[in-house]
Length: 464
Image 1 (cartoon, rainbow, N blue to C red):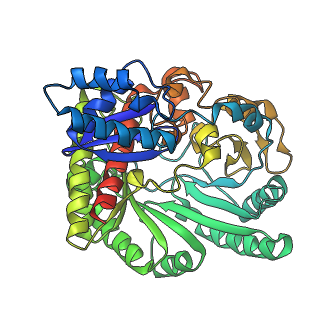
Image 2: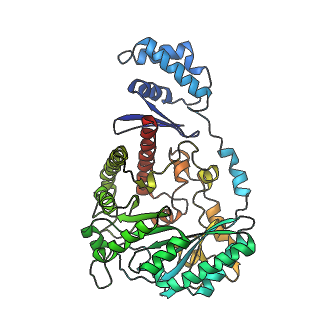
Image 3: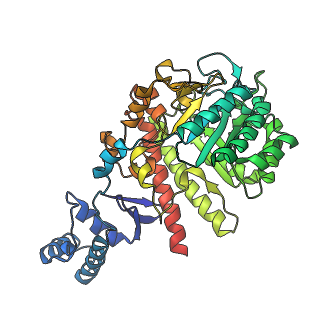
């Protein structure tokens, strides 16, 4: 399978199975389009066959000379021989092995606070309540969660724990104790914990900064962009805007990170479809690691509609240009969804098994309940167990394990499948009622992001 597209004036070909990317001229793009029309099973030597050359030459007579066409076909045939064009799928046959492989839990999302000091309009967690009561995770429950992770991770050494909410810094005292306990477990069980955190910044202060810089590998800082956008979407509970209060704290946190990871992370809605302006606002504030994602909500005031999609795609194209321009000026920034490895390609296991929710990754409530991920918390049909008894409903995890790129018909035919991994199970379930359903707007936007990410990387390769 190949995928051809045009981005910011460049013709690009992705060989889906090998992940090879080719920047080509217009003639080559047209020839490959003819070759791909109903026939993709090419073997070395096929593209230099006399009859095929004559057919392509006749079809391209008004666009290129015969010798140019022959030369292009010879180059393409070399790529076929190298397995970098019209390559076969080596992964589908591995699915039985992937399904038979019993994975271990390697990551936990600790919902340390089912409470929040903001009242974000689009919040999927209902201002931190997650379909239930408010609560703060005690250090004791958090320690039990780490004990569970050590047991459930088997021989895996590197483990990840994300502090999430609501607003996790409402549980800062618990977080400190949990991290200290994790450091003890590292020595006792030869494990390495990577702690991460997502915060709205309201409770950031020097003591928290110092702790995060010492113990937290990646800090995600929530801000929706320009003051008027952020204050409309992310007010305090009394309705006042949060921008002026939190921005100095977020800027200070980002500066203090040094060479440690952070992201400024926003959400765009139907109300701010010009979200590149918000990304550029991040840039002007001094942030250089960014993410801004489309809202997923059933609230008609904010939900992304099908009519919004073309404009959003244009925004992603504009973002490519802005990122390219900033890089050329010597002050680049990164955008989370555009980070693709063109040399190593997507991880083979992730190509097939997706995000790992319910199998490798679980969420823990303040009371120690286990769910497949933070977006399923509070939905009783997805309760998997608790930190005391472990997984008591393995059948829930099996539902997630049974979904992969080759069980979803739309994924089988999608060029982005090996980068997307099948998408978010929660978004699929919430929009269709099925774990293997398709959140179609999300799919469209993800495909566009993959194209832009490939284009941005390919442009950089061409420059070098």
